Image (tube, rainbow, N blue to C red; front, side, top):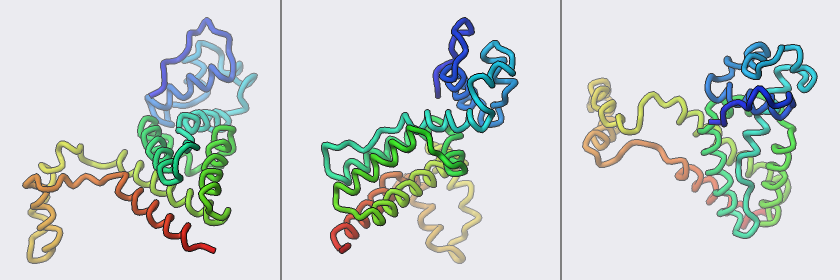
Length: 220
């Protein structure tokens, strides 16, 4: 979560507005953001915000870019798979820290400086590894699809990891072995503690990176 709003005694600025807006959204979701609520949190009149931001969409673009700015760029001093793994894991952690952000990033055109720097560094990492521009573009989008999809699934998963075995036991009667033999067997493994049933972010990431490495080696 973001830090608490800045002191009302500080002069109003775009930076202070975005800092406070990010705090509001992190703690209350997108519904918590309005010009009126933001002005109240800042201790100013709503009209004074328009001296620094155009509208609510401008604020959303600004706080999204701040979130993107928290994600580590792929490091330059290592191989491309390690660099992209570092970037992906950092992105997943940041998006879990800002639960509203993944869906908003996917729904908007993001051209802020942090996003442009993030994409350019990613393309640069892949190009340096020998990917063509086309394959590099396909590669980072495939990785990001995994990041956003897995993050949204994790944020909306109906059970806590610690309660998964208990939940599996509760739903066991709905998957009788004569109708669903494989699901029933898997559920018994979860109940018995042989397998926790919790999906791994890096498992899917490994598959993507390995597949991309094959493409990198075989592409003309």
